[in-house]
Every structure is written in structure tokens, then in C-alpha cells.
Image 1 (spheres, rainbow, N blue to C red):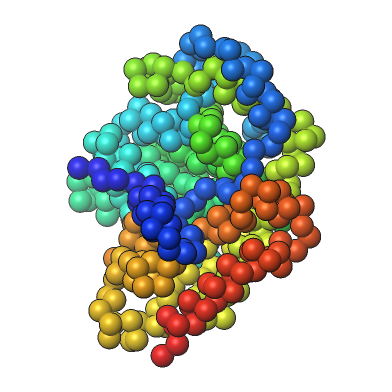
Image 2 (cartoon, one colour):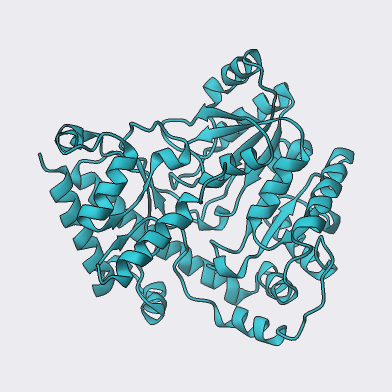
Length: 415
């Protein structure tokens, strides 16, 4: 049985605590936490009367805009290589379901991949990530992982990667991505590359996509939930290779789409076509968002480090993956023995919401958690001010949450 998504469940638990009047530092839910750009709201209002079904793959206008998005990122794309959907989640599932074979996942990785593989009747083959970043398997061990999996009766044919990564908030190096592409090529793997965070690299640097290094066997997905904070609007897109095999995958995904979601909501197509065209107002909004995420994630990382946690320095998005192992002796004395125990203890006793690493496929006993920093920005008006601030971590409402986090971690980590 596939259980309730851990990310959605923690958000609902926090809402229940807050409804009961309890103050919670919410670091458990990966919502971008920013207001809607008015130019996007204008497009949605203009399209509100469009209530006809759109083509399953998306209209010519939106597919052309999505193809241009990839072309500007160094991945030449034809309109017929694109599909759009109500969010990237269904496209990821459709890709996993459409292609035969079991699924190799870097561990830890986003909670949904393993659940979707189970829904598609596929076996999950965990592969450890490198020590300095996440999102891809460690190239040094991937070939051995594949050999052991086959010896154990598995049939690994798909590799899912996340560039940049959720949950670690890091970007894989070009050399590392090249390494896993070479192994995938040698072993005949199809790569599904989830690049929904690629516009949120903190220094604005590039993301090396497998679609450049292994173009004939890479499917890439993206969406507007993170770079433009439109999670609730459900806008996702996928690119397949311009090959005979890619055309077959496109047809298979289209067939699944036609029976599951029919099409993207027609008004959202209008929003997507405009946003993916990247006019200056959209590009500037994403730049400000990226700077805000970088500033606050860096500030939160420093608080965890000062408290004695270890973590990979964040380089993209709004996530951290701290390890509180140094407090194990103290925490074990009060009955906290696993990462799940730790997450429950932090929320129930200290009002700090995080997600245990176990939810992302990590070792259950590890004291690692996924921390999302993007819900610290305040209410709508405060979020606009945060977007325009040169030092958002010093804004009173953000600084107050950071100080509360510092106090909680001091109580938890002090022997």
C-alpha cells in the first residue's frame, strides 16, 4: 500500500497544531513560500473563461514556449518533444510507468519517486549519493549497485536523478553527472532527470543536464512550482529525446495522460506559455527569489552548524539535510532512537517541524532530516518585502524565527 505523502502529511500536522494555537517553526514542507507575480495573475484572469479541453500534450503555444525554455538552457528542443500536465508529478509517474524495468534511485531522494515506482509495479534499487552533494548516485559505486541488483533478480533500466537536489539542497558537479551518464550509457539505462529546481542555483550558475551528455536516453521534467512558487497552480512539463525511441516514449506517456488527467487546465496553459517565454518581469522575479532562498538557507545552515549538526552547505533551492548525530547520547536517554523519533520529538516537544531522512529512503536509525527554509518569509506583504531586501535574514519576522530555531537547537543539542 502506498501511504500518505510524508511532505503533505507534515504540512497537515503543522496546520492542526497551529489551529490549536501552538506556535510552530515550520521547516517541514517544500513549498516555495513566495507570492504570485501580478503579471501571472493577470494572465490567469484573462484566461478564466477558457473552459474547453486542451490537447492532451498541450497546445502548440505552450509547447513552443516550453521548448524555448530548454533551448535557452543549452538543450535544443522541438515543440513535438514537449508535453505539459497539471504538475510535474504526473509526468514523472507516466515516464516511470511507460518505460520497462526497475528504478534506480539515489538515496536519499524526494519521497515521491519510490512511491510512484511502487504504484507502477517496479522495484526500487537504492544507490548511495556522493559525500559532498546529492541528487545523483555516487558514480564510483553505481556500476557495482547495478551488478548486485541484477544478481539479485532485479531489472534496472531507469535511473532517476534530481538536479539540483531535494532533499540536500545541493547541485551535482559536471564531472559527477558525466560519470553517471557514462555508466548509464554502458548499462543501457534511461535517465529521468527532474530539473524543477534548476533556476534556483544560489550563485546563478549552470546545471549540467544528462539531456546534454546522454541526449538519446534522457527524459527531463520541470515545472513552475519552485522557480515561480506556483505549486497550487499545477503546471509541469516534460521533454523527451528527438529519437525514434523518444517518440515512442512520448506516445506512451500521452496515452497514460489521456486516461489519467486529460490535459492541463486551459487557463494554466495561458500562464505557462507566458511564464516559459521568460519576459523580463518573470526573469527578474526568479532572480530575486533565488537570492532570497540563498540568503535564508545559508542563515539556517549556519544555525544548525553552530549547534553542532553536520550538513552539506546548501547551493540551490531552499533545503538543507542536517545530521544531529552529535546529540545521540543525550537523545537516546529520552527514548529518541531513530530519525522518525527525532522528528516527532522536535515537533511535539519543541514546536520544530522537519521531515526525517527515512522518508527520503535514508537509514531509519540516522538522525538526519530534510529542512525546508522557504516558509520563514512571513505573510504575503512580508514576502514581497523579503524579496526586495538586501539582507532578508535581518528582517524582524525572519530574524525572530531564526532566533527561535537557534534556541530550540541549543536545548536539543546541549549535553
